[in-house]
Image 1 (cartoon, rainbow, N blue to C red):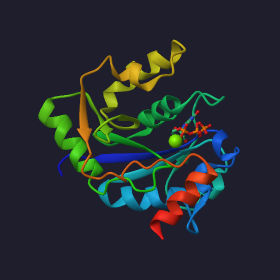
Image 2: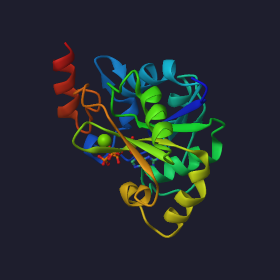
Image 3: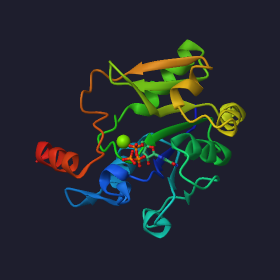
Image 4: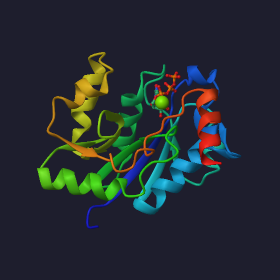
Length: 195
Ligand SMILES: Nc1nc2c(ncn2[C@@H]2O[C@H](COP(=O)(O)OP(=O)(O)OP(=O)(O)O)[C@@H](O)[C@H]2O)c(=O)[nH]1
Ligand SMILES: [Mg+2]
């Protein structure tokens, strides 16, 4: 692939539905959840970084750069994305959450291919029915637009990207790809289904 893709795993949320435990570090079948996201993304991307607002040292142990949101106060995933866009050296930044352990192994290549074939500014993944608004492929030049949106006090990712030319990339062929684990019960359900 000629286009260099850097990935950021977003692990900066409060995880209230997980009882406030740091979701990326919560274990699924004996491994921290972020380990699954790393294992899915690392083979697909030139670089990887982790966005976390707590437990920095525990995240650093995975061997990738760790950074927190520039703006304190948990302003949502866009806050992590804007901080990542400021750091990225890739031609594209791929964003993904720490709580989707079964991300597609062909995520980056399909997102890049669709973005480029549609001449879009960015791409959003879809499970075939719904957008996955934290699974995005972003051109670094979107930084100013995202920063302005956040500075205006807006938080909703889909409202931000509606301002841009977006390629929607369907992974309907992989029904488990975006299984999202937000609660202890969902961890248990996924562990059982992977057993
Ligand atoms: N950097 C950053 N990421 C966030 C923030 N809020 C949520 N995220 C990330 O966005 C993704 C999707 O969010 P949720 O699944 O709702 O996670 P959450 O907000 O930690 O969990 P709940 O409090 O239970 O809603 C996860 O990867 C979170 O880590 C934030 O304020 N900053
Ligand atoms: Mg979630």
